[in-house]
Length: 271
Image (cartoon, rainbow, N blue to C red; front, side, top):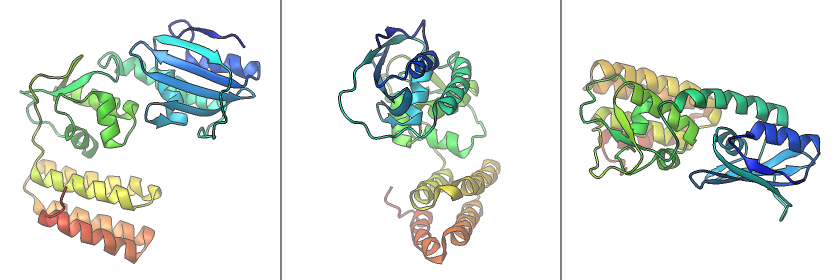
C-alpha cells in the first residue's frame, strides 16, 4: 500500500478506514508540525498497536486523531508488535471523532500540548475542584502541558481540559515559551494534605473504587472551599475514604492506608 500525505488533507479516521478496506498489514508513521512522532500498527486492516511518546494503546490513537497538521506515511512491518490497542476499529473511530469535536473547542484557547501554562499574578479567588488543584501543583511556567500530564500521570488531552477551565477562570495564561520568572500558586496547607491523601489512595486502591473515592475527596474540598482552616473536614474526609476502602477491599487494605494518612495529617508524609 502506497499511502502518504498531509494530515491537513486526510485525518486519522479516514486513513484507518482506507487501510482497513484494503486489509493492510504494516505501520503508519505520523509526525506533527511540532516534531512529535507517533505510530499505528495494523494487522489485516485492524489496529493492534499504537504509541505516541508516553502514550500507548487506544489513548495514543486518540492523540493522533486530534492532530490538525503534520505528515504520515505507510511503511512495511519491521518487527512483531504486542497488542496494546483494546478497541475495535468502530469504537476507535467513534471515540476519535468525539475527541476531535472536543479538541476543536479546546484549541480555541490551547493551540497545542507544547504550550506553557503560567500562573496569573492577579488570579483572585476561585473555587477549584480537586483535579484543578492537582494540576496547579505542577504549574510554574517551566513545564508545558505534555510535561505536566506526564508528572500528573494523566493524558495530555485530559490535562488540556483542566487547563482550559483554569484559563476560562483567569487563573492561568498560556505562553509559547517557558516563563523567565517562575510563578507558582500557593496551595493552602489543608488542600495540600487532601491532595496527598488522594495521591496515596490512588496508589493503593482498585480502579473500580476511584469514582466513589474521588467524590468523597471532592466533597471534602467543597467544605474546605467554605473554610480553608477546617481541619475537621480533612480528617472526616480521610475517615470516609478509609471506610470506602475497607468495604471495597477489606480491613487490611484500609489499615495500611490509615498509617499513611496518619503521617500526612501529622505532616510527616515525606512528600
